[in-house]
Length: 339
Length: 292
Ligand SMILES: Cc1cc2nc3c(=O)[nH]c(=O)nc-3n(C[C@H](O)[C@H](O)[C@H](O)COP(=O)(O)OP(=O)(O)OC[C@H]3O[C@@H](n4cnc5c(N)ncnc54)[C@H](O)[C@@H]3O)c2cc1C
Image: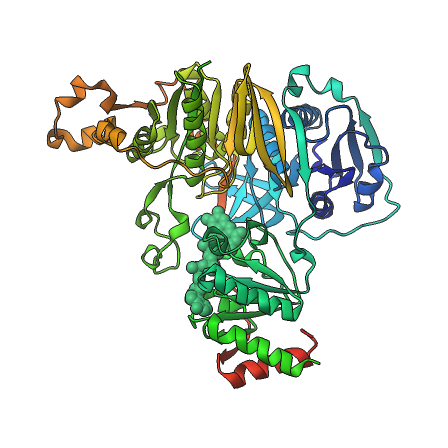
């Protein structure tokens, strides 16, 4: 009872990275709270799936293996979580800020009238004082995310309602195995006892998933362009530099919105989180939503015509200049000096 | 077959076009300096609704929005493009709502509308990007939901076929009506305003807008002659809402703190774009094995 739950997403029998990252984070939060970490896996043909999650320090894994539970549809998965949570009364429930998590989380939170915070960039345990009620709440989940307007970060709490629910994007938390032989309890549930036949009305008749086209998450060098790049044509310059440096190309949301580059290359709070050895930002001003996705890069270079661009504050090297003049020089001198 | 469609639409500050004058001296956003716009993905949703109306004559499209008096603009924009009518949920008691309280208010209003086959809205609003309200409304009404939809492929025998996005791909789903759908920005853009409809509805006003004009209201007599120029407003009481579930009262999430971001300023090297500066940087990165 009152433990920390993580909903584990499945694709082709494999637990998604974002779920394993949340189990890792969940383990450390559970240690702080002195509670157990529990995982929920829902799908079809889940034999041995517990082996994928227990090493992350999971004390109990709830498995719902049944027909029509894969691919994911909203109603049966939410019915299972809602009914399981009514029995288990978790204090915290975490899920990925993926298409699935963002479809499922709100449905569950609505049924349980519990609060849900989307796209958190940090999760901590702490206390909260409600001055009006004169009441202090200890051991709350502090859900931290950039808020409207860029320069502020809001900490959201759910003092009275349980579970405290949050979604987090893939890559924001680190994934780390705790113990390959971690002993946790495996509970096989009967999905029929948790769902109604009316939960299976939506049918997936066709499905097509491609492996990610880019390797942004794993690339040691990321060359990113922002709105300041100015055009699709200028992005070709960025691609050329990336090609020479064996780097991947990323972008700010403003560049994506302007149609300079595809959406799956967006970096930031509502895009990918990257931690490369080198991050070069071209024409990116550095709003918090963008910074949230790249601030852990080891070395940051900012190329910007504005010497006071906010991103310069977190950069190791600031080049005050335009893309058009700097990129060709970088290519030229790289070719000249690398053998 | 004719369909009854409700479009959920929100008026939002235009966060995509934050100009320099929208920043305060403290570096935060001055919300009132941002233009209020029709949430972009809600326009994509409106287009899908209007296409269904085109395909199934006799169908109706109703705009439902929540906000202050000026949010009546969203209803007018809908009427200009082919919607049939609209409701503005507006009440001080709705203020301060998080997504749960918002979905409660919208769900009670939809119950009041009563007869519907499809509820459709944008996937998310650009001022919060949470994507929570659609699924929460669906849950409160006990409806099936299809989120991240790209296109409604067909409606046949009270079944709807929808193409939707999933992580790294697409899928097609079939579901019986009634249903709640949320639409992605990659879906077809909304048609422009129709000149004839603009003429018809340009004087349409919400109750608050009208009373703000008072004696200055031009063509006051028109509003009795043409009832469709009076945009309906609903309060909490009008939709039989429970005050405990509305606005701040009905919001389980509380903002504990907001802090301004102070970036840990690093010791940075400042260069200019000159030949020698760029060359020395590249050489330094190569020497340190950062690149190469
Ligand atoms: C809910 C929400 C979520 C968001 N999520 C994200 C997210 O995940 N990722 C993200 O990136 N943003 C996100 N944003 C948007 C974010 O707030 C900023 O609007 C965005 O990051 C700005 O992109 P930019 O820096 O490219 O554009 P701008 O702020 O317009 O900056 C352009 C920069 O280019 C410079 N420049 C202009 N011309 C040149 C030139 N020729 N050479 C060099 N420099 C030049 C300018 O000086 C300026 O600094 C989100 C916003 C909201 C409200």
